[in-house]
Image 1: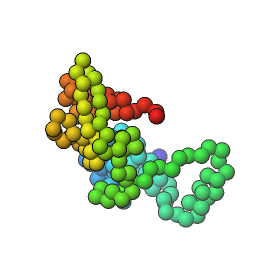
Image 2: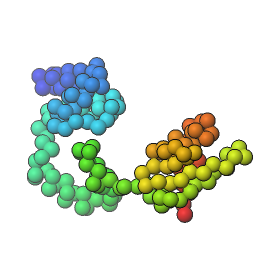
Image 3: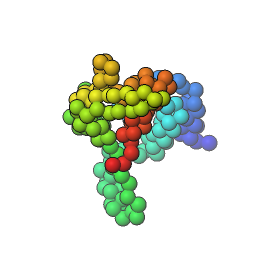
Length: 162
């Protein structure tokens, strides 16, 4: 076997023994950006792919390859959705929606009868008010009312199509 093949095989085998933290460091090294994932299997697959890409001399910024991919993509019968735009800087919320579209306007009172007791929750601009206390999520209120973990939108019937 040639030396390059042996080196790649050893590098791929080393990925299997790495911790998630080590895999994330390797990801940063090979991709030049931090990984958003903590999933060990996912990181191993992505890194194995990148190790092989580098070994084959495939550069991700090669303009000729990118142009060829774009040309082939235009001819494809299948259209892929664009990935959602996520800000790299977690403090930058300019591109994020301000409110969940399922929520009614601030000032609306949600009513839920649970085990014969009516519960009222007032929708605020940045949270909810229940029994004089403010909450950030409907799920917390639903859990408090029912004693079990609930999705707030499901509990209050806000996930239905209007």
